[in-house]
Figure 1 (cartoon, rainbow, N blue to C red):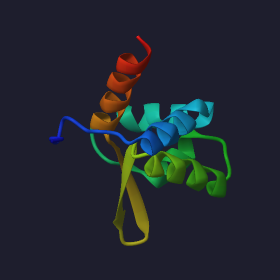
Figure 2 (figure 1 turned 180 degrees about the vertical axis):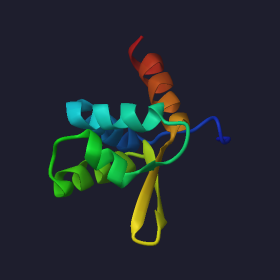
Figure 3 (figure 1 turned 30 degrees about the vertical axis):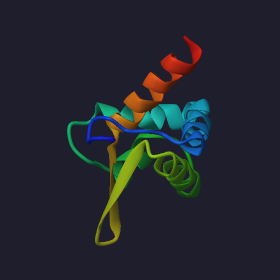
Length: 99
């Protein structure tokens, strides 16, 4: 049984995470979000990356679909926070499968 700190990933989730992390821009976005001590507003992300809002939205959706981040709406604004337990589960699974 999975706990809050132990996540079991399906094969589909593994594929989604690998796909999300394979894109250098998404990797940088995840690093930025993970470096914050609190939720990261979407507006802050737009200021950090020189990309169109629609492109940023696409990258954020890919990261969220992969389970690497979680979004929280506050009115018309969206804040993002990392899900380190999912990344840890992914790394553990890679180590188990490939090492």
